Amino acid sequence: MTCPICHKETDHKYRPFCSRRCADVDLGRWLTGAYAIPAEEDGPPEAGETEPGETERRGPSAH
Image 1 (cartoon, one colour):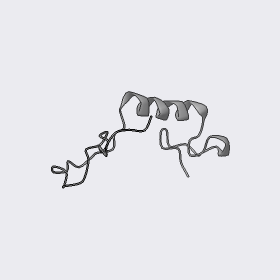
Image 2 (cartoon, one colour; image 1 turned 45 degrees about the vertical axis):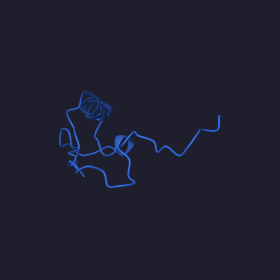
Image 3 (cartoon, helix red, strand yellow; image 1 turned 60 degrees about the vertical axis):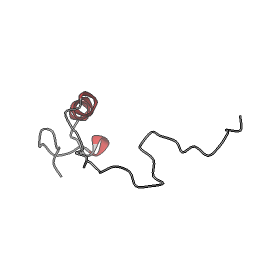
């Protein structure tokens, strides 16, 4: 198996990377948004569904 960053042989300690440096490079790419997972746009929600982050309202909350 080769390192996805520099294509050298991997080191068992840092697998799937060859070194701590390549692991950190990969982490940095995720944190800066260089890697992104594409999302498909959905149409409007169907009846009874909620938007992401929305909560359903089912009466007074019991706090």
